[in-house]
Structures are given as structure tokens and as C-alpha cells.
Image (cartoon, rainbow, N blue to C red; front, top):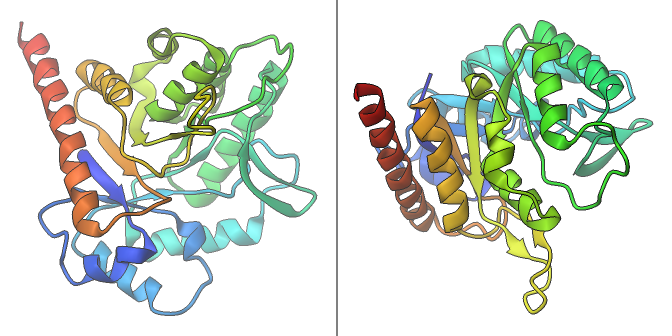
Length: 285
């Protein structure tokens, strides 16, 4: 399993990476297979070339694990073939959300009702996907922007119930925890303390932006800005307790030149390495 701070392999710099521009700088790349399955052109060949030199982690966008439509058997078969064809990702991950209904993709990651019935249904779908792909599944906590009403559970309790019922791992997005905590007024460290850290297999960090720069009363998870110090602190809190894990620096909007993105990766890696050193010191004490 790769560890350290990796990057998402994005189209704007895929050719540069294929030519070796990031060799020795990035411990792994994360890929969204949704952008490659059943598609032609030069990108699948470039991805295969990159996969020969770097570990690749697979992260999906469109399974709609919380949706009501049946799982797309044709897409899952294509996804399994894609993963088996050389990526060698040790797992596949997707979001704890719904993203489609009645055969239509909504192109968003929408929150679920925080109920035991919902957790039971999502967990069954996670297990089914894992069986079809013949590899472990991770679920990722999402950001959300509207209260979900009087659900009997809160988000942390819902996430834990899904993890336990599905017996799966967590892709812990600490930026999403910070965004939700800021928008809805709860303590992100208390949220993290309720999550079973032994189920955390991978982390995401990202930048976010204010919906209105003057009012600054709503944060949007844009993945379009550098990671803020508050998110650095949450990353460090987790790594101090878990030890080495793969951490993905997400950048999907306002993507800077590769050299600038690599510098941001190095900055986040310094936070990660310092936390890892504190973890080691604590274990040795």
C-alpha cells in the first residue's frame, strides 16, 4: 500500500507526468476510472504508461451508493475490467451519497437521510460492489450544504453505522469535515473522535472557497484553492493517531501548473511527515 501525500492524475498535466515530470516527487496518483472506462483516445494509453512507474489508487464519482436505482451492472463490469487491466489499485472508493435518480446522472454528490434504514441499504450496496469488483470498497464522507431535517442520527453516527454494517474502510476527507463543521457549527475534532480510526484506509485533503467573499458565511468544497491551515491541523491530528496512510491532495478546479501543484504537495507532505514523527515518538514513549 502506498503512503505519503499523492495527487489526483488530471488531464491538464497527464502528458507531463507521462514524460516523467513528476518522477521521484509523488508517491502515488489517484485516478477516477469514470473518466476512462469505455473511452478511447490517448489518455488510457498514457495512464497505462504512468501506472507502470507509480502506484495508482482508484476513486469513483458515479456509483451513487445511496441511490434508489439498481447498480449499473454494465458499468461495474467495465470498471472491474479497467481495474484488472493493469492499474493494480488495492481498493476502489466512492462517496457516501446519491448522485443519480431514475436513470439520470445529477452530476453532484448529494447527502443521504441519516437513518438506520438508509445505512442498511447503502451497506448492502457497498458489499455488492465489492463482490462485483473483487476488491475492497472504501466510502468517503461528503460535504453538504442544507440541513437534512429531523433525522434520528447525526452524520458521524450515520457514517459509523454504514462502516460497521458494510464492514468496509473509510476514505476520510478531513476537508469535508472542516467545511461541514464551519457551515453547521460543530467541532470537527469531536466529529473525528467518534469515527473508528482503525477503519481509515486513506485520507483526502483539499482547498475550499467562500460562496461570498464579503459575507464569508458559507464555505464551498471547490477543490479549487490551496489547503488551509485548519485542514492541515485535522490531517495532522489523524496521522498522529493512525500512523502512515495514503493522503490525497485534491485539486479539481483552478488547476495550477504542475510545478506549482507539486510545491503544494511538498508543503502538505511536510505537515504529514511532522505528524508521522509525532506518531512514532508517541509509540516509542
